[in-house]
Length: 91
Image (tube, rainbow, N blue to C red):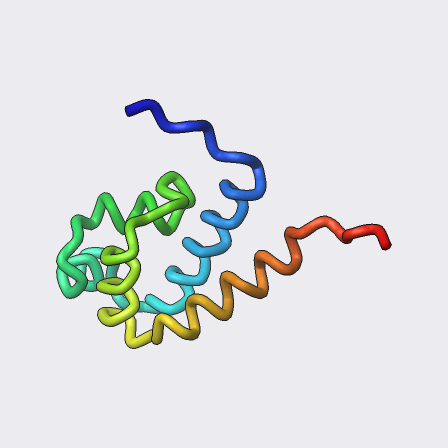
């Protein structure tokens, strides 16, 4: 399967999502959170740095649980980001 390249906006959204996870992780180690979520530290590293900007839902759900962040909070943050990304529609 060939995957289409990500757009600039998709890459930027992934970087913001990664930054959100880094802030939620705080002082806890990447290894600790990755183990609690059942993902590899490398997977978490890729998500946090934006190199994996479209993680699977179950990965996001597991990380949210490990970080004590609700999926609603993550979705709201992503929706706010999406609203900032959308070009203004001309009337």
